[in-house]
Image 1 (tube, helix red, strand yellow):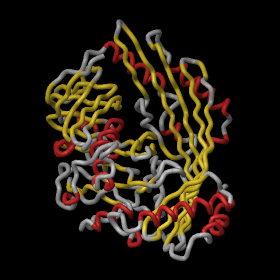
Image 2 (tube, rainbow, N blue to C red):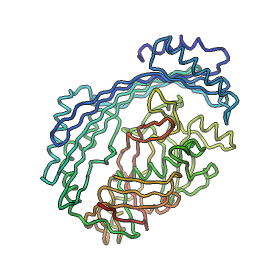
Image 3 (cartoon, rainbow, N blue to C red):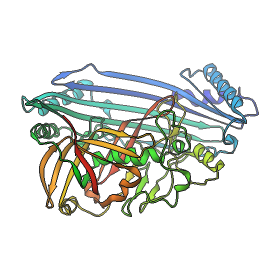
Image 4 (spheres, rainbow, N blue to C red):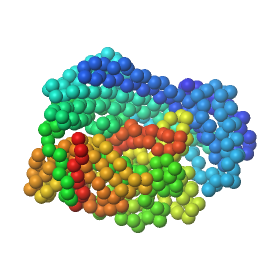
Length: 488
C-alpha cells in the first residue's frame, strides 16, 4: 500500500475545504513473526501483517481519523471525517491547535541491519531455538524451558500539507530464554534478560550475537538452579547495586513515566495515573544526586526506540532531561508543548510523540531514555560496599498512580560483604520513593558496565497503546535502600 500511497493521498486531500490550514498523513505497514520452542517442542509460528493510514486535520480544532482502506475513496472519506471532528472541537480546546508547530521537514531513517531476518528460513530459526532450548535443560530440576524469537519490520510514510515528507523503516528483534527450576518445593524462574523481554534491539539476526543468545542457555539454567537452593534475600536498609537489566525498569517507571508531559498536564489520570512532577519544577528541581544525567537519545545505535522523526513529523535529536541531578525538560512533543505554553510554561520541545499503530493518534511517550555512564568500574562499585546486595533482572513491579512510591522485585540477587560478592539470594526486592530515591545515587558505572536494553510492552493511553521503548544504562549504586525478601 505504501508504494502508491503518496499520490493517492494528495488526490484525496483535494476533497478538504479551503478553510483547512494543515493536514498530515501517516501510513504504516508492519509485518511480524513470533517463533517459540517450549521444553523441546516447537509451537505454532505466528505471523501478522497490518497496515493503514492515520489522518490529522487542523481547521479551528484538531481532528483524527484512521482507515485501512488505502483507495482514493477510502482516504477521502477519512479526510472528511477528520475534518468534521476538527470543526466539532473548534473553540472548545484548552489551547489553539492553529498555533501549534507544523511539520515542514523531510528526511528518512532506516534501522541498521546486517543480517536480514528474511534471509533465514523459519525452519532454520526454529532449529536455532531448539538448540538453545536443549542447552538450557541441563538438569532434571529444570521443569520448563522457553526460547523465543520475535521479529518485526515496519515501514512508515509521513506526509504534510506544508511540505513534510518522511520515510522511516524499522527492524526490531527480541530474543528470549526463560527457564523454571523446582527443587524441594521451591520454584524459581530465571531469564536471559527479563520475563518481559528486556533485551530487544533494532537490527537483524546480528542482534542474537550481541545478546549472546546461542551460548546463554546454560548460564540462565545454572542461575535458576542456584536460586532454588539459595536463601531468601535478607531485609533491612543497605546499599544496593542495580545492574542494567533492572536499571531499565527503574528508569522506565520512576523517570520516564513521571516526565511525560501529557501525564503532567492531566491526560492519564483516569487510566494510568498522573505524576508527582509539576510544571514549575523544570529548571530548578533536584531529581537526583549530581551523578544523575539522563538523556533522550533517538539516535543511540541499536536501541529499540530509535528514529529520526516522531509521529507528528517533528525532527528528533538528543536532549538532556536531567543534568547533574537537576530536572531540565519533560518528554513532551509539539502539541503538549503548545498546551504547556498556553498555561504559561515554556519548557522546550522533545520530539517524542509516538503511536503504536496506524489506528492510534500519537501521544507523548518515552523513546530511548538513558542514564549516562559514569567513571566507576563494577569492581570499584562492589569494593566500596561493606554490606549490600546486587540485583539483576526485573520480575515484578508496583508503583502508585503518581509514579512516586514504588516496590520492585528482581529474579536474581547476590549479597555483598566487605567489598566482595557473597552468596546468591532469591526473591530480592526493594522499595522507595521516586522523589527521593535518585538522590541516593552514589556511584555510576563506567561504559564497560553499560547495556542497551528496552521493552516491547510499554502501555499507556485511552484507547490503550503498547509501544517499544529503549533504555541504556550502566550499573548504579544507591545507598541506604529499604531491601526485603519476597515470598516463594
